[in-house]
Image (tube, rainbow, N blue to C red; front, side):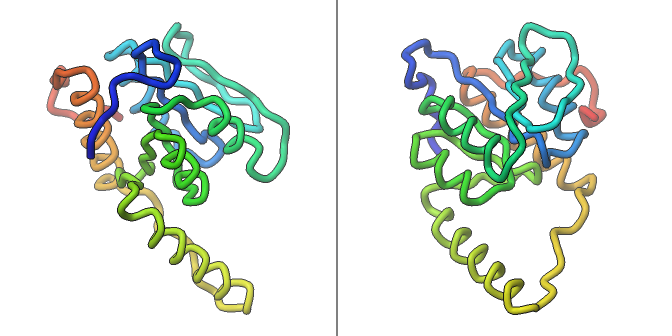
Length: 174
C-alpha cells in the first residue's frame, strides 16, 4: 500500500479520523498515544459524548443521532491521504473513493483491491440476516487484534513520517 503524504488541503499534514461510536476503548487509547508521539491530529466523531484526554492533538466532534451521521461527517471532512479508523465497510469504501486510507480496529486495511469483495460479503450476510438466519457477530477483540492494530498503525505512521518511532518499552501500548 502506498501512503500519500500530502492531503487534499495541500497542508501536507495527514489527519486521523475515528468512527468512535463503535471503536473499542483500547484502540482509542492506542490512538491517543500515537497522536502524542507523532503530533498528528486525531479526531473522534460520535453521536454520544466521549471523554478524551486533554491534548492539542486530540479532538472530538459530536454529531446528531442517526444512522451513518458520524460516518457521513468523517467522509465529508476527510482529505485524500487521511487515515480513518472504522470497521464500517460501506464507509471504508467511501473513504477509499475519496483517496483516504481505512484501517479496522483489528488491524486490517481496506484497500482498492479488497473493498469490493468485502462489500459483497457484507451484503450477502445482510441478506442472510434479513431472511432470518442468525449469522452471529464478530468475535470479541482480543490481544492479538490489539497488537495487530498497533503494529499496522505504527508501520503506516512510520511510512508517513519517514521514521519508525520505537516504543520506550517492549510492553504493548495498552
